[in-house]
Image (tube, rainbow, N blue to C red):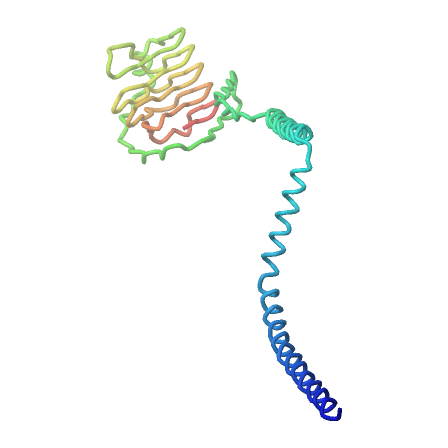
Length: 242
């Protein structure tokens, strides 16, 4: 009887030892497995979150009604088209400003019929005036001048062109109009000429004055013309415009 009891106790001890060894070994393995699973869970966590999001999005899409999705798309397209139309209308409302260059106004010509004092004023200097070359003047008596000049009177504009034969004026000539001197290398204005108008000097290299003269209007000089010294006894009612 004791032998059987000893055998039973021994058998129980062996079983206890076996169960103890079985419990200790899997515990260490389980501990090691839990560490690797944690590391793997940390590494794969973003991918699992992305996968869950994709699955949730797919489930949401599957649950959406097809007709409602089409209506939503049409509504967004209508909103975009109307916004583009409003932007085009706002752009068309802006007016373009066109700058038109101002036209040049011709200079006003003031004619003084009875000047009290001669006034000479240079308004615009577009070209330098060439230096005056004074030549000795042969003095003549007033009697000789009266004999040679028969008081020529011209009504209207007088044009003296060096390239074309035309009218010639003498001393003490009276011109009731404008006098045009053009296309000449040298020209000497006679003494005592009275111009009841303007004097135009065009393409004259050098204009000399024989003596006193009278111009009730302005003296216009082009850029390719020049004139000599004006006598002190000359009377100019307007201005010298270069």
